Structures are given as C-alpha cells and as structure tokens.
Amino acid sequence: MKRDGTKTPHSGGSSSAASQSSKDVPPAVAPIRLLLVDDHAVVRGGLEAMLSVAPGIGRIATATNGLEALRVCASFDPHIVLLDLRMPGMDGYSALETIGQKWPHIRVVILTGNDTPANARLAKRVGAAGFLSKSADPATVLRVIREVAAGATHFPDIQEGEHAEDAGLSARELEVLRHLVRGLTNDEIGRVLGVSGQTIKGHLKHVFPKLDAASRAEAVTRAHELGLVV
Image (cartoon, rainbow, N blue to C red; front, side, top):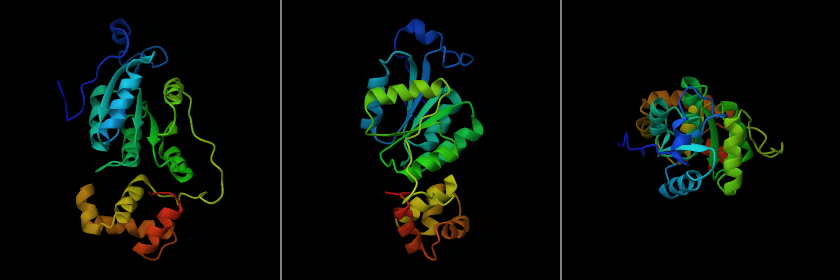
C-alpha cells in the first residue's frame, strides 16, 4: 500500500536477510534500511535500481521532498537517508535539521549536484554524517552508505580559501535565502514555507548581516559568491 505519495518500502536481496532487519537490530548487523529523497524521478529510480540488488542493503523507501521524507522517517525508521539538497517546499537542509532533532539515531548522507565546499561545511554543521556529489560513481555511493551505517563519517577534503565561510546561516535561513535568490517576495516565501511574510522579514534581518549585505540584491550576490546557491 502506498503512503503519503511515497513508494512502498520493499526488500533488496533475499527475503531471509530482509526479515532480520528489525528496528532493534543495529545496521552493522542487519541489512541497511535506506530512504532515498530526491525530487527527480530518474535519480530516485536509478539509485533504487542500483542499491536494491547491492549486498547489505535491505528495504528501500523513497520520498520526493523534505516533508515526505519526515513522514517516511516516522513510519519506516531508516538507518540511512540519502538526501538531496535542492527540492521544492522543504529543502534538504531543513529536512536534515529536523531529522537530527526528532530521530538523532538516523544518519543522513547528502547527495547533491551542488557540491561546493560551503555546502559541505554547512551540511556537516547541521548534522549530516556524509556528503557526496551526484557525479560519484556507484561503487563510491554504496561504500559510503555502508561506512556511515557502521558509524563512520564521509566528507570531501575542503580547501580553505575563496569559499571558506558559510556565513553561519541556519538551515531555515539558508532556505529563505534560496527562495530570495529565486526572486520571491517575503509574502511569497512565507506562503511556500507556511509562515507569515513578517516572519520571513525577521529571518532576513539575521541573514543580511551574516552575508555582509545591505540589500536583497547584495544578499543574492553574496549567496552566489559563497556557493550557497546555484
């Protein structure tokens, strides 16, 4: 049965292996329950096809955005979430922050096409256990999933310098900034995020000084300079 628009979790590998994957068995022993979160059906389908036959991977669930991911986490209790950053509605950073608050035992690996040093630093600060580029080969993706499930972390070597600062933005502030870059007004951003335009105005009062920006246009420019948006 489908639930909340997500694909029903199914077993990868043998049925006997999948039956061992109960909620009280650690992922180092049990097949890894995996949640794939991406708004592109081709990406989700490709990852699911690749990982469903990989040794050590148990059931796989999918979600198309951050809000769906939270609903699936509540019912499916994955060991690992493979999470995109840019999605409509709730983006990856906000989903990452909420997962960490509600289910600290769930480990999140960011899988993004916007693999800038600033994004890697921010993902780590918000609580990710790993960070991967979508250009990574399948063997690397599978290896990182297994390593993170066993308790390790995986982040690229980050060179300090041009993009050394992420400006100390919170996940919600980054989400607001990204909608600002799209050209939305405060009221429009508020409707997308389910809050008032005044709340968005309050967030921007914190965002602007962190970016050393005096206006919306300067904030957009700084966001691109820091690699916080694409």
